[in-house]
Amino acid sequence: MMQAKHSKYGRTKLACYLGFVTQAISANFAPLLFLTFRRSYGISLSGLALISVVFFVTQLIVDFACAKLADRIGYRPCIVAAEITSAAGLFGLAFIPDLFSNHLPGILVCVVIYAVGSGLIEVLCSPIIEACPFENKAKMMSLLHSFYCWGAVGVIVGSTLFFAAFGTGNWRILACLWALIPLANVYNFATCPIEPIVTDGNGLTMAQLLKRKKFWLFIILMIASGASELAMAQWASAFAESALHVSKTVGDLVGPCGFAVFMGISRLLYGKFGEKTDLTGFMIVSGVLCFVSYLLTAVVNIPALGLAGCMACGFSVGIMWPGSLSITSKAIPTGGTAMFALLALAGDVGGTLGPAVVGNVSQLSGNNLRWGILAGIGFPLTLIVCVFAARKIAGTRTEARRS
Image (tube, rainbow, N blue to C red; front, side, top):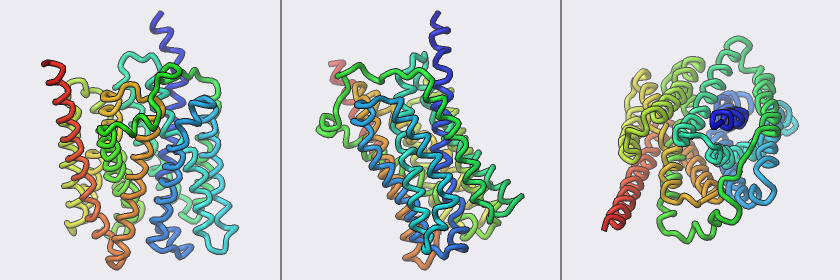
């Protein structure tokens, strides 16, 4: 009976998995074209950095608005709209930039459109899975977030093979092909069962959450997690090609693709063995590895070691985002949609800050991406401090219960 009940949520699970694949396409496709945009349209490095900034700032705004919107009109209309806008933005990327004499504003218009969908997916898919009656929700959450990684691998490998076969000049066709995935997933979200994350009236509001001092620690933790991940992920392709002097094919496959593969492996491993592992300890070790990876990538002038640093960074950041969600959910179990929205917002603040720091420091250093990557080492250090603080709070609470 229980198994039959759980099986009806199979389409919900599939829809959320494909939702994270959609988000991976939205976040990773344009960065693969950074140097193509620079060569074809004459866009500067700071202009390319603006693409990532606009993407994550748009997600940030959507995150903030989503809590009240989703609770007011329901999860289903919002998540269906997410897939529609994601598809529209990717389709538009093939046509809209050419309508502008300065192509950058046209690109940014499309980025805003699919970032709206990506932001909604980011806020809503996690609580949708959390609300399903699965027996091991921690494992399901880790598996859900791993699909972002496999989606990133798919878009990087698929794009690389497409470019190798047909040339980067045909990237507009590929943008339309990637748009078919969110378009097809509209049906899944329109028909799958979706349950509320908390019963009506029992979830905390944004104001109530923001009044809790300890919640601000989790906000900073999410900012550090997003910045640690995206500062490297968004610039890995351009860094591999320009700073390490390898071909675009090799750079994309071993740089951002290797990053995503190792990030996915990290999440799968934690999903399988996480019950036997102390999450905060795992995150502290991951923070240290991330710091070393940034240092190795930026300082060592050997292409193989630089790319190895990029992949190691992927493994190190794998647990950061879902781990931060898990730590916060355990500390504030009645957070509801508002909590997931604020955490996603904080992660996007980090996702905006990280790539912007790398791009702008690189430009100030004479277009030297090594200095930009080196500037990113502060993000994992911040995460380590926050995890130690969260661990201390949890320990203090445990001692208080015992006494």
